[in-house]
Image 1 (tube, rainbow, N blue to C red):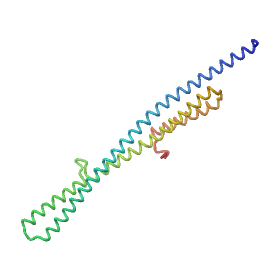
Image 2: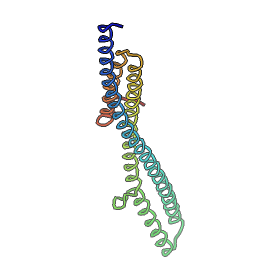
Image 3: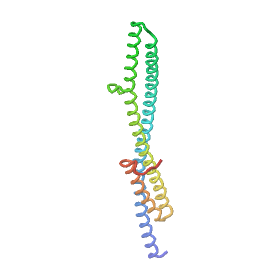
Image 4: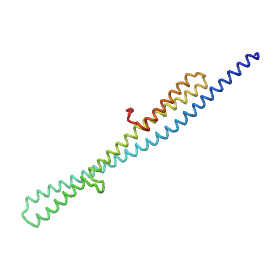
Length: 196
């Protein structure tokens, strides 16, 4: 090997070393973005599960209150029938008082703003929890896609070092941008794209 060939070989090795450092930096940046998107994704997933449980509990409470309300209304209707069949004034007064109490209880089961435990309030709370669950689920899907883009980008950037094919590094860069876009959508506009 002549001095000229040796010099060319050293320059080529130095150029390859510089390219590898850039690819290594790309991999490090992708790994950072992957860690961020995974963390955001886990947080969104946890929020989605939590809000789903909250909504289910609220709907169960709503059902229980609705059943109690129906039972009390049925008892009030039965009491009204009893009123029509009795002529005893003391009995009528006692039954009427009970019917009035049952009617008030049924109204309270329907709307109880002071405690937030009437069926109207429970339904509103459950719908709010469902909305929060859907929002978190949409975020989670975006973060998962972002993580996939970053992971594939890392693989392609690593393959660039092994194969020397710079086209893989460019595809990795495009995937980085795609991952960043999906992360931004997950953070600020989770319902812009429907990914269910």
